[in-house]
Image 1 (spheres, rainbow, N blue to C red):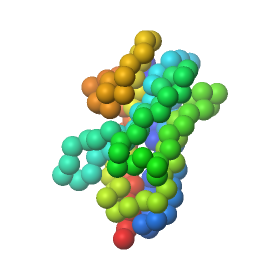
Image 2: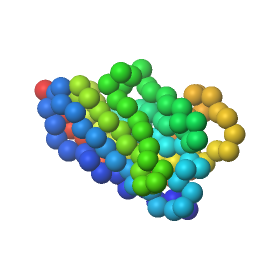
Image 3: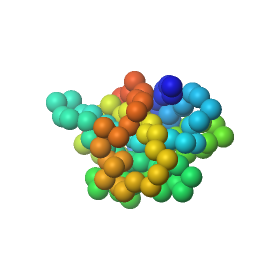
Length: 129
């Protein structure tokens, strides 16, 4: 069982930066790929970014590539989402999620929320224009 708690959301202006954190419970954090998803009002939840386990491969949605950076600190059981050049269209509830997988998986595996076993409660990010 893994519990995830996001933090760092808030109200920011367009062009600002913000870092989200997701703290995980449990001693097997390093065994999980960690993903970030977001859901805007009236829209479906969408993939944002993922960082895999030991190799630390990262994948991003096209809409955030070059602006967002996902990283992890296994010693702190924490995954981060550094967001720069924020836009109003980045406004959403941001969720972190954990995916337990012991073998290689292609990017497509990590971009679907069905691949994740555990989810946080979400943190709101609002970007004003």
